[in-house]
Length: 71
Image 1 (cartoon, helix red, strand yellow):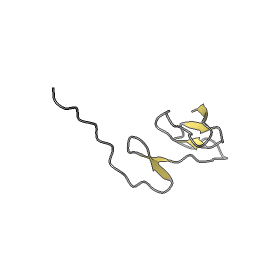
Image 2: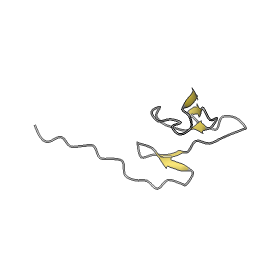
Image 3: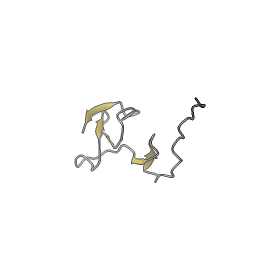
Image 4: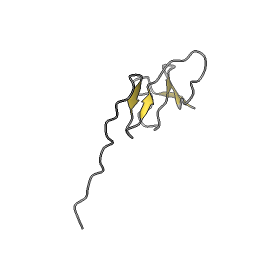
């Protein structure tokens, strides 16, 4: 058996300022407030009222009080 090879981390991607790079290396919109309804693509509403566009449940709404509800 050979030596195990660690999986490479996703390459750094320069995301637009309103986005962040998730663990998969994708640019995802940062949580945002929206008074006119649920923003397109939102996956959860945080306890502070902001909407998250997270692609994974782990860490969603961290820094925003946690998830109030999944969409």
